[in-house]
Image (cartoon, rainbow, N blue to C red):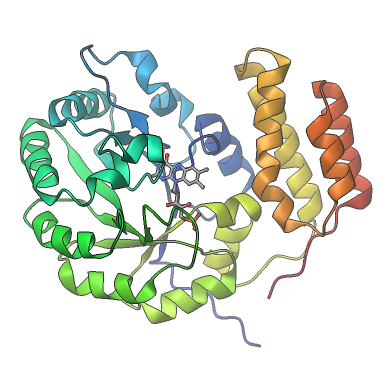
Length: 327
Ligand SMILES: Cc1cc2nc3c(=O)[nH]c(=O)nc-3n(C[C@H](O)[C@H](O)[C@H](O)COP(=O)(O)O)c2cc1C
């Protein structure tokens, strides 16, 4: 089959993944893999009743984010708190921040934050009015279709049209769905006729073929966000940009990336259990790239000493690891 490189006008965004794509991960990732143009940070919760301090926005410190352009994300339902944190971030040098209107976690949504705010169009309207008046820089938003139903987004988009947003990132599931079921591409398509903003598509891009399918369906979209798919296959953004999968030396590159990540976290995290928890978490998605290796994976998860864990993983990469072939 002829190779069809994608147009370079396409922009790929690293999705915010709380617990996974922190600044340590983003730096090491960008050193080892290519293809992303930008990353949105996992959400930083705004602060109530206290001034924003530098340590509150540690993940966005410019010195921790030298390799990838970053847009910090804030989770909040109080416009003044949001604006205070946004202004702090603009003063650090950022020109855009992102508002999280998508988090499906019941703990967050039940407090009318994240996707729990989506049914409350009036509150979002008032929030934007107040926050944008107080903010010194630009704003983008990340949304789902709604909390329970896509009716929420069809009510919301005309309201968003009244505000000067950088872009609207849409993950076409409801909050209630969390990550279950499929993405609703029909509803996503309908969204495009309701909005005047630039739209970023986000959801279930796991392979080059997935990307080709969605990009052919939505020819006017040229910004794409990828989360779980790139954590499982770190080569994916580059594969998409080049229109072909690379064949040579992948396992070795994954091993080098894993080892660099291990050492980067070892210098940042206090104590072996934090380090081990972090590294074991990486396998939640990365394991999906390999032929099943249940016994070794179980041993990795059981290891209690970082040196033992690293030996085991290196042995896996050198003797057992076999990448699954992709359709
Ligand atoms: C473990 C996990 C953590 C996430 N953390 C965030 C977050 O902090 N902010 C956010 O906007 N979305 C967050 N998301 C949602 C992702 O950014 C993305 O919208 C979702 O995974 C769908 O994209 P994907 O199919 O490419 O993974 C998270 C998702 C997962 C699975």
